[in-house]
Amino acid sequence: MTSKERIARDLNNADALADFANLEPGQIEPYRQKHPNFFPETFWPENRTGFSIAALNAGVAGFDWQTYQTLLREAWAGMFPSDLTIRLLESSGMGQSLELGTGHVYPYQNAVMLLHDQSWRAKICEECHNRYVADHAKRKYCSTKCSELNIAKSHLKWWRDTGKKRRSAKARGR
Ligand SMILES: [Zn+2]
Image (cartoon, rainbow, N blue to C red; front, side):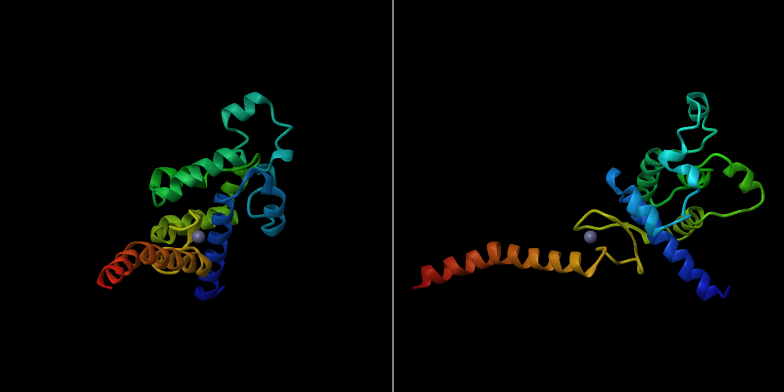
């Protein structure tokens, strides 16, 4: 894999992690179809039913998706500090601790490492408040749709504030 290919893969994975961070409870299935094998299979609800409460409480089964998402959102807002990054790299499914010993890296771990390393990429859109992966440090919006929405809003604000003064000044001048 060339370094260019590796960067493209890492950024793809980071985008998939942003999608996960923005996920609502009803959207698990379409997410899994779009990003198969991004997390270990045992990460997802129907594969966790075999665990005893004791195993779940002891953390042997790894994170469930909602706990993981809460941590991830916290990391996203705080630019992936080391303590949260370490927790996010931990196993996220039963059996994964064995794979960790062999150096197997899941795409979600690859994405977490990238966002810790290049934490300026982990941004929250100023318009829609979704988390996204920025291509440059000064980006403020997740998409052209959101930046256009913001421009339209500031035009409207100008029309209301400044335009109103001008219109009334004009009216007085008559
Ligand atoms: Zn947005």
